[in-house]
Image (cartoon, rainbow over all chains, first blue to last red; front, top):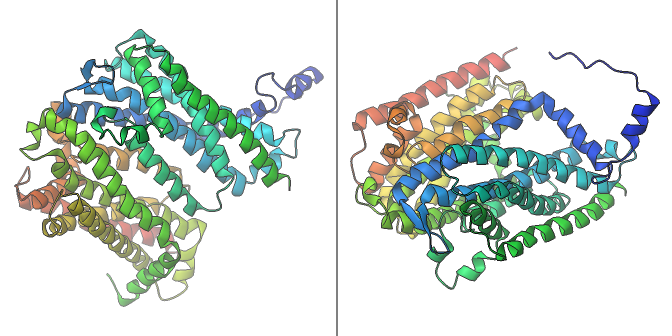
Length: 277
Length: 258
């Protein structure tokens, strides 16, 4: 049993500080704070989330990599399979993490915890819920992406110093998918619907030039692969980790900026319609 | 141990499933199609052009298909040992309702296990059909390979439900998924031979029931010999299932007898 934290009497200066919304996040920052506090009880669950992408890295990079040998990337260089696949696993894990956080966890709070009903009894607005939950998902994703990059670096799978930019790229991927995830959540009605989410994520995970270069697909299929947003994430992270900087990367990044901004805007409206009726 | 009333528990599961089958059917059929085309065909192209000699002369798709059969069956079985069990005990309290009838805790344990086995069998047969359509196995050999795969699934369902029945919160279930089910799915000879693992961990496979199930399924599907003697692999899979049944019955009795 953990002891309850001692309650400190608030001074008026502290109160003023706490009721002033931070500039960037507005009052959504308070929701982030709430999530941090809630996870202090379950920090093991939080930290063990690091392991999943690392398991994949070793199974695919080392195990299957031993069968594949070297691969030729889209720009014609030949790299060991582990170096090729690690960025894709990072991008995919950023997608999965952001979607799971913004769907499963937000749905549970929305539907069963009735958390947001309580939140709206304070000065927080539906917009703050969308911003707060997305920020939280990104903080969590950044933690996992950092851990993954560290393990990949120790394992010798990082070949370019530009790989440090893979961290913000992973956060950007999380922003795009998390924004869309929030919107999806507001349309869910029961747990059965989550089968549909997993069924949408699996093909994205498998068919986004993740496990093999896009040239492996028949020429007729290749344009279709670019319809998957994750393909753009994989291209972005892979180019950065291989040190292959091109102007086209900005285009790939723009996909996620757009997804995230549109997602936030729609989610804001939907949360308002759901909670303030 | 099993009694006629145990089958009533299975019937209860089946009646409930009549309302929820749609979501699972979709994923039962679509998941193997996705995995076999992405990993078997796509990645297989790279493996077959690379160092495929580790696979003993078959192409990657053919090699992968029985491994995925056993790995996916294990995931199904393990899943049925987690949330349905804690929901029955704690959240929905359907077990409590059942216990006010002639049903005893052992019937609940065995009934859940039989139902999970039936579901894993259906999923395995669907998988064999899909894999046959891909040309990854013949239906006859595939159905033979489904037997050890389903037995492994039942063993995992039994052992994990014994664990779940003792839980107070569902946090332990995330740990099972993260530290047991997922690593086994990835490392137990499903996607690559355990000989690809570093030498100092390769021997661990002999202690992993899923690996024995995978070896049996693969040997039956390909018509080859498994890594060790047949009797050893069969013994491990059967022994794991038997121990799991005993554990889960004991665990249900301990939790549900008041």
